[in-house]
Image (cartoon, rainbow, N blue to C red):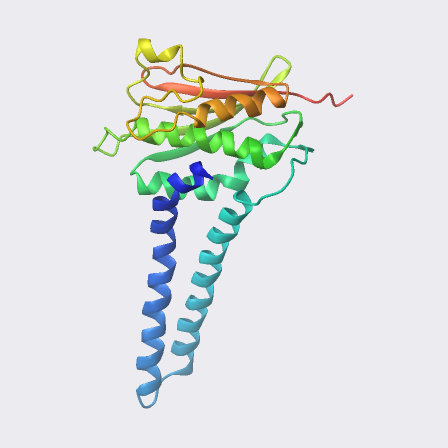
Length: 227
């Protein structure tokens, strides 16, 4: 919930676009109706745009509600690529709000993993938030964030890579400690919670330097045999 709260600004910005469009098209409909000899096709087009923008806004809300759902842990065999794609809309909202370029590098034919989808998605979102905050110092539009999936020996890896300033040496050894944060207003629980979720799934989290600059946070999850 803390992660979703941090994303609120980006989501609000994204929701404002279809809502503004709906208001504009509604005003256009009002003007068309008050004008004699209005072509019905113009009115129909405006109404179609209202419908499309309403669906767009509803989809954003649906994704957010899906992440915030309160339910007991339920694990199922899933594709990590599908897991990432389910939240990519929200991640794109947040990235655009921060002026960061987002790209996906999803490996083909990865084995499935047995996970609680919502919990693993929260880990990915935590990594994304860390990356966006690391890129906050870049005001020239060169900030880049990559979400990558790959097979690492017997594990499936989901990684979030940024081209930010990297991690200072004194902080590197404590990143996953509860209540440790390099941010003034940070709670120090995001990465610690991610670590706990990974361990409960029989996996692990970690980080490594990204080249030529930045850092890569990753979660490793045991791959289920297809035999």
